Length: 587
Image (cartoon, rainbow, N blue to C red; front, side):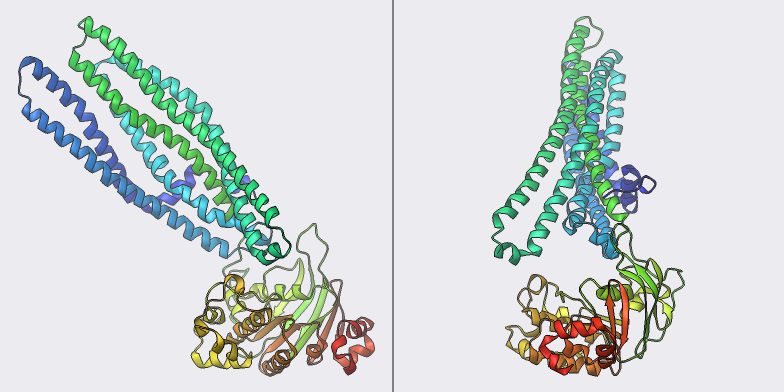
């Protein structure tokens, strides 16, 4: 998944964007970090004075107290600053997750279908987590370490410029080495994050078809697949760690080289009386304080590369196309909210991808308000796609889809979907309680409405038999329910919305004859006050329809009643004689 160059912002600008709402807390944390460094920088000067007083028999008690105060202040201010920065970093992560989750839930269906759900989930979890370190270590840590380094070098310059030159020479060599290592850290970190996404995708694939995996005896094969992804993530992380270690230890090595160089040159300067012993000791203490700043700066640079890789993946997810909040013209049409809706297709052509065959080829039909319309045809004829275009999950390539005489693209998307009850072909049930699933599309439905729908869909007896009634958990994807029960739950969920347009895609395919007959009566009742569109393969359902639309190869072949089509449509007659054999005596 890639982002067009014009859409891609630099990682630094993105990180600043995440941090901007928390700039006050970041400034406070940075000031505290600088105060910590300042208290540390003052200590060598006190030590220098103390050594001088010891040699000249001057007062030392006050200096010892001052040293103790500086040490305690350094620890206390450092702890407070660390807490402020880490709390702010967690807030940055939270805000990034809130934004990304909201974005992903508004993605166009086509965008979701082109990518692995597990990889998208890893961008919300693993990638956003890296923003925590990069906010403190890279953004604030980088600034404070540069300031601390500058201040330390200035203080060193006040003591002896020759020794400053020795120190800067060692640090320059470290900068060269780190500059060569940084690109390798970025590539390895990016690969590591992508590998984590592959693990998520593999796990989602396995758990999404867990029963099939077990029934196929494929546990070992799936285990190897996931282990291979985990191993690749490990390799990439080890490569990143290797280069991070090189960068980090280069900084430490530079400081140690500076220490040795200063000790050697400084010792010679003490011997020649160019400086005194107190100055040399103070200078060596500054080098000791230089080490954390150098390590922090090296860590900031390496962490920025890791964070940049994570930001790039987050940007890719944010660049995926989302559904419009309002209408396509930003002037949403608000239509009547009562009464059945009319549906019209005018010369609609559609394909799921430019490289794939046409699914709808100039499809046209009209469905008046109210009543029941059935869509029949061979598999792949484009029946389910009719519902997807009405719901505006996809946009037609040409032509128009009208609801109540208005193009669906002119509707406010929320209003359009609130007028529709939709039962998908596989009748998905979400993890949670049965009550949560039933109220998912109508959270404000009352108890009486709920009980009425339970009776209508013949779920009352099942609810009574459950240990916690409506508050019983149904498991991942409703695995604790049978296929027929999941289908009835999905139908009840749609009916609770009191829709103006009810879309039923094979809504009774997994029901037994008794429950199917009951639900046929329910659908017939709903058709008196609602426009009902049904994709069905059972003749017992189709013959109830006021009109039947026959589709084949993405086109409408015939329209009429059951009796009319048996006589006028060879395809319908063939389907009725083969696919609907259970009730063929009614032909």
